[in-house]
Length: 150
Image 1: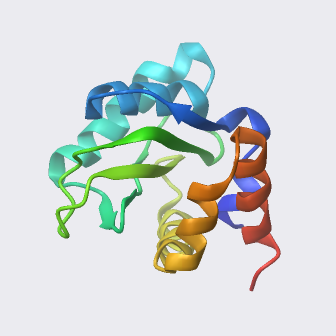
Image 2: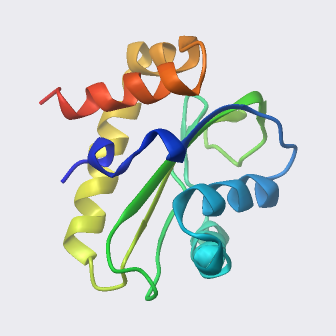
């Protein structure tokens, strides 16, 4: 299973305007799950962020967590209109957010998905393509390509 397999057009947003980490995590939770599960997912994402920033550098962050309410992994992707401070080690603000929430018992799968995303996010050309996508539809198409690449 790959990150791109978990995405749908409805779980990708481009041009979102937010000025805070909390608002960003709320938006991700809403994209990740139905409304009745959003609070639990927000808590899972916030708990993980409380341990330390999930910013990987180069303006990319990977908010993630585990949630007992889920029966399967969920993913979302947001590109902000304007980057926000996110505690990245390189000091750069973040505009690209790949979010992942898995059921509590998905330990190995969770780590494998995180590794898949982190590997792809380490490539500057990949990040440029994500930033250059015209809208959410084009952004989703670019992310869907991740499933094609080995």
